[in-house]
Length: 127
Image (cartoon, rainbow, N blue to C red; front, side, top):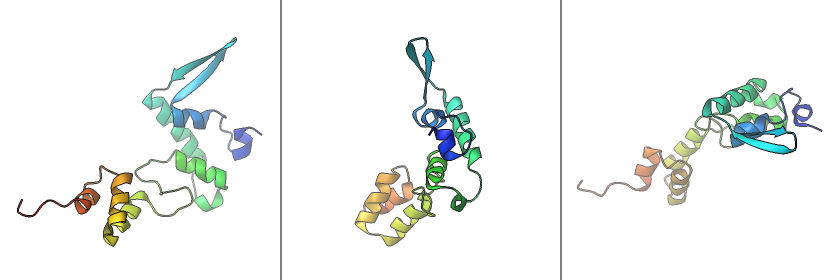
């Protein structure tokens, strides 16, 4: 069964691999030619896939939910395809809990998050 039949969306089979890997493979006679996609082309393919999965996640099959999650914006998507908690909510919960392991996990997941970094490694007193 090919991917479009599996997902029931009519998407071409290579769309997800193009969106994920940023490379498309074209066959020319007896040779496969790899072509790197531009960031704009990757965004276009991701939007094409995301458009097929508009609506409630509960109405999608598990495979469709994974597909929807994989092309969602990383900063605003949930922590996994089957979770209702976003990354920001998860990080906030780790910061509020205040445990060393929780703060360490938050910093590993999003090292650019200044709030979790500052809570994990507070500035020395007297500065």
